[in-house]
Amino acid sequence: MNTTRKHYRYYDTLIDIAFWSFLIQSIIPWLRLLGLTDSQLHGVWSTVSMSLFIGTWLLIEFLILAGFMRDEYAQGLWQRAGAKIVKLLTTALPLIFLAAVIFQDQIVDWLRTQAPDAIPSDVGTPQEAAILAHASGALKVIFYTAVYLPFVFICLYKWQRWRDA
Amino acid sequence: MKNKLKVLRAMRDWSQADLAERLDVSRQAVNAIETGKHDPSLPLAFRIARLFEMPIEEVFDDTDQ
Image 1: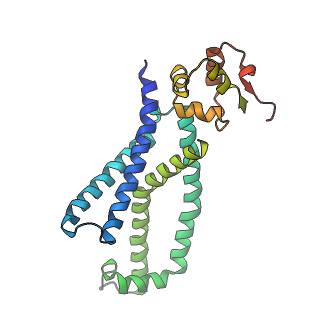
Image 2: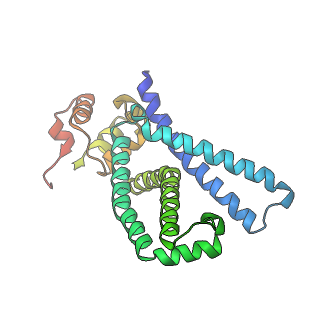
Image 3: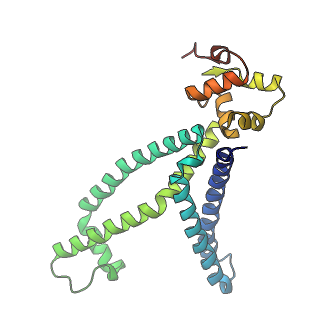
């Protein structure tokens, strides 16, 4: 038996592990919010949740890059999921940017009242505050995109495979 | 694209996993080809035809394309 054949089997299994691991680590914070976990175990839950999150994220990053593990059908699913991601990004990011420009003043006001740490009090003009808010917002968008896009990818991949089955 | 993969496989009493092993692809790939959700590449289509010892056009039918 050659080794590439084994890779194909492992790829689908790893995709499933990543998907379920992502779901489980997503549920833990909700359980905590709903008070369904023992308060004394919050620290343990946080550690478990964060470890799962980082482990799953690294696994998905590997799976996205590991072309050698995909057969032609998995490659097709990968491309279809990728095409949907491209569509999502090309529509969502300009919309977020447009919303940030249109609601610039409201965002700054909201940050000043709800998240005062986001804008230091010694920032001079409203324009400077707006620039700072935009820079901070842009960094957050980049951060959350980098963190959550791989999860979106794995969900789309699983969705395509489920639909085909 | 329609194909006779399921029939040919059943005639040999092979499971999808058996066929996948012989073709060097995943079981999901065999299932997707059988149900017409995935059109195999030309090299894979030739491998399938060779495995069943049939001309490629007898395994695959593109008349409804």
